[in-house]
Image (tube, rainbow, N blue to C red; front, side, top):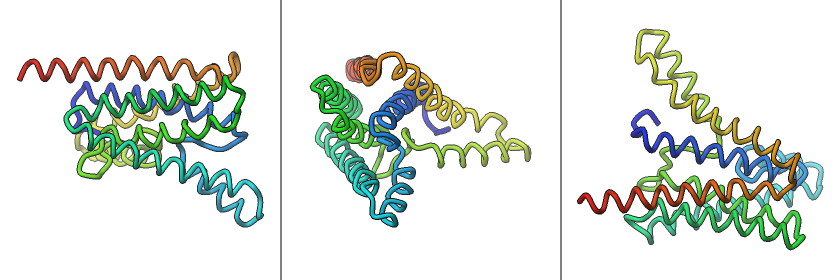
Length: 216
């Protein structure tokens, strides 16, 4: 994260906020399951398997769907090559839009499927050589790095190396708060907000790519 340029850091914070917003919506429409936080779903899967309840089926299905989203996102990135970022963001936008349409069609919990696909795909935006540089939808690793960077600063190392990790976590938290507030007011129609946000971010990414191409 600290090796990223300012533009990428800002984009990462925005994506993390979208993930927080979407995860809250998914959590509420599914009755306590996650569309981006697969550690939580893995815990619920374990509980469901022990109980022999439908919890295992829902949690396991969302985990598989999220992994499929990663596969699709990575594949789109490979096919798009130099246009990887805007192409992947367009995919995420399309999947979020599909979730909104499913809600409008009255299909309820099925809207969680494209939401999980979208969150899986979003995590491939900053991937390189098969490795994810920035985890956008899960914060445990980010918080570990935050703590380690604070320790480095306390022992005389880089003073502000922890700030990017804090901002990434705050982005997810802010998105979660906004998602909860939006759902309280508009229900799943609040998904309009992340759809519009991703449309804007996709446009920014595409414009940035065109600008870099023109300057070459």
